[in-house]
Length: 379
Image (tube, rainbow, N blue to C red; front, side, top):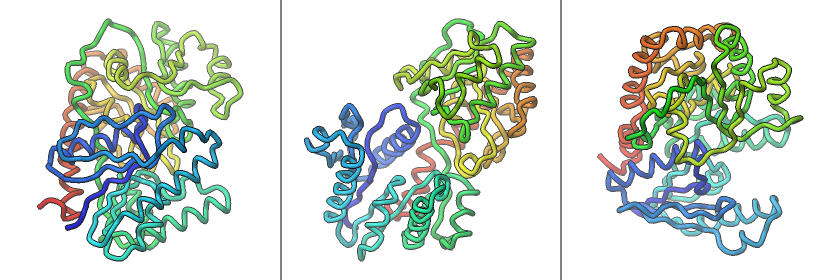
């Protein structure tokens, strides 16, 4: 066996993809995998990935050139140059595990004797709206056919690739994972009456607009509750329209857009909530993906209200480990929230059962072993 490389876009603390692959790195390291983690580009603060691993070496490909260039397109060209630089390093017999990065996949799949594995969590055509984007999606699919292995996060996503000609025997479903140590020792502070959502806040992916509308219904019978939305705060006039929505509904004083929070503070914010909510719609992105935030929700032991989109019902049962509402049904979602408020003891039991599901089904060590075994890195 040659060298093992883990190729990442970079280190971006607080973002869901970053939490996802950091859980992989921790598991790979604990399993004794000797590999080099290659970061293609820096974040805006040029933060370096913590060098806390015994077996993994961290290699950042950026240099002062990135610091001097602020133009977005020029920075992307440097990004592509760094991908090319990495491709020159790889030799026959090497194994390269890539998280997303379709540009790296397209470049590396043609290298003779190099074993390329790619993990993807989104439908290849989720952003294919223009002719150029559709062409890019098709290139991604064609590259996937040449991979040694493709790891996907859900059964619908596997079907999407199989339907587009990727051999089924090359594809493995690797469950979403969550790091339980992030919530160790986190205790509930106070008795705040709040429903909390944490995420990017996109309506088409996470249904924040539908959640706001459902919360407005909740306020009719439980006016003492607040809705807290953690993540990039919307602005007046933006595409989400959520600032205008809360004003139109007359609930601006009951909805708090908290903005981005330090990743270290998020577990406590989630723990303090009465209910954690994810009103995911039946969009292409939601159908084929699987929300990493759901795993973190479940680890809090708080009741979780979520919709029946994609593979979510495969892992969670309504009234047992979560409260599952019909997707795109604002009234049903509101009813689930109201039930949790009015049945705190039963809801608490459901929350604890949800934690057990997360620990068993979304365990990074278990999923890492599946992945590494398929790559012939471990037996």
